[in-house]
Image 1 (cartoon, rainbow, N blue to C red):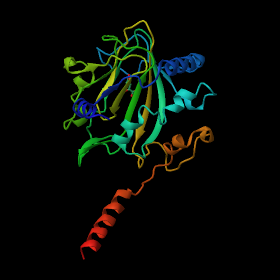
Image 2 (cartoon, rainbow, N blue to C red; image 1 turned 120 degrees about the vertical axis):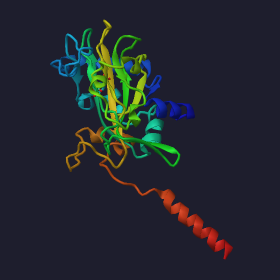
Image 3 (cartoon, protein in one colour; image 1 turned 45 degrees about the vertical axis):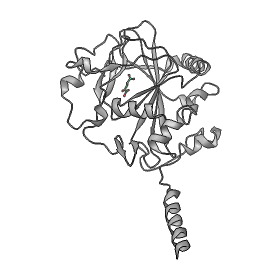
Image 4 (cartoon, rainbow, N blue to C red; image 1 turned 135 degrees about the horizontal axis):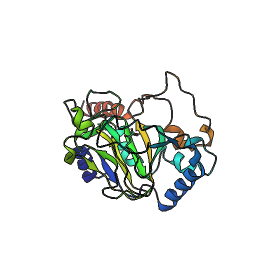
Length: 278
Ligand SMILES: O=C(O)CCC(=O)C(=O)O
């Protein structure tokens, strides 16, 4: 992660990473979705929460279960467990033992409603936080939203309130509903294959979809290796566990703490120096 990327993420609360998926990977993902299109569940217009500016004529589409699809359809989705193009970002923000927590797809057809703006760092949430300490960023739940179709300026789709990942005051309701201070929000254009990286504590949501082309956004979620949001106190490897690579297995392991070797090295170096000087 470059110094420029760290600066942009720290000040804006999001980062656009170009070309996370290649054109071939985007094609494979879209073909897999087309093959399972009958499983897309259209929501009952329940996301705008009464907002006059976010309402739409149809609901958003949701699709899950991609990791369990038969091969080759599952492959691109499984690659997001530890994709080489996002590993450097996740290691920087979450540590080398980051955990993959899941992947989902959302679709929006022309006229689909938006989603009220949620999260935003208040109230403070241990699992979904963001801070800077000892020269580095520590992020809680972190999302990589890969766009599988192009998003142009004014199309709608993902939007956020930059800087809100560091908010200290509760967000007024009319801002959350996109009925006040709309000029402070940004909608994020992206090409198919680009990803939006954002900590969940950034206040984010969705603007109604205006384009004729279907919006497809594949969002993968990660957290640090010691956090598990959805394990209910137990951990059972998924049925496809043995089909994963060793790296992928490592990043879906049960939450655990790994003693950082650097702490041992510090005391060993100190002892070696002391022995030498005595
Ligand atoms: O439309 C988007 O990309 C944001 C969706 C979102 O925030 C969510 O599903 O929780």
